[in-house]
Image (cartoon, rainbow, N blue to C red; front, side, top):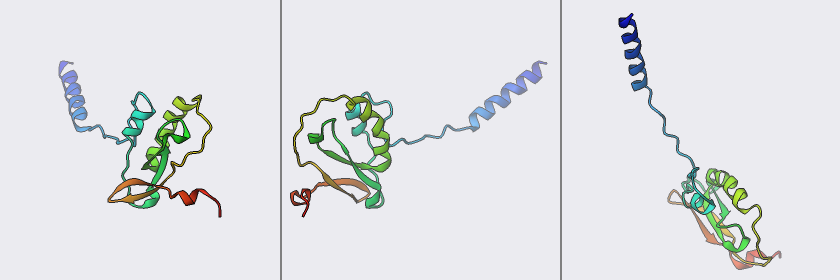
Length: 120
């Protein structure tokens, strides 16, 4: 009986040693304490311009925008909703939109030209 138990334990150790935990890279740190921390950890990698989008830097519209990977933007959404659902923001017009693009494998944002805010 001891030989069977020893063989079973040996097989378990061998099996455990052969299995490798796959490291899954998430687009943001899911353990972040708040939206700002999650945003700082957001993935900005890209291959084409379509991989990039912009997200709010804070709860209010005039806080600005940040260029991130689209998967990171989706992962940031629950943080934003949780933190900003009841945020009190002043109603004001600000010009903080950005145009996103992929440059050297990283999402970047450039300020949207002022003239593009108005309908012609």
